[in-house]
Length: 145
Image 1 (cartoon, helix red, strand yellow):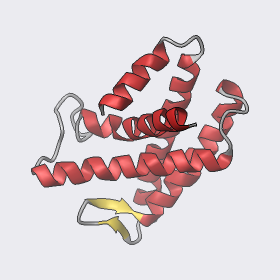
Image 2 (spheres, one colour; image 1 turned 90 degrees about the vertical axis):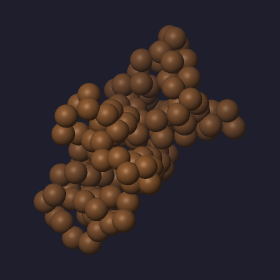
Image 3 (cartoon, one colour; image 1 turned 180 degrees about the vertical axis):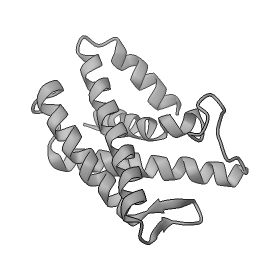
């Protein structure tokens, strides 16, 4: 979480950093929204019932599809020629893993909501889990390459 926070703060001080931050928000929010809508409409088998009982495989795949479409289109506007489709899908998978990891941590600690700042939404970490996972991924990606 510290790596993600520091990288996001660093990003804000870059001349074009706001573009990447907006693009990340488009990617994460569209993935979360498509996952939720897809899971609610299509239902189907559970993805990881012991970790997150309402997440379904349909929601998982709809999140990948919806997030990819939105992030790819937004990339033409904000970040042309920076990410290809496969890199976008990889980042979306990291967002999904971040969401599941945060759910697992809450289950292990016996907490339903990580805070009460946003009632009905599972807490602040539920809004940031995917973003933090993607931020760590890109920070490590940039550091390694």
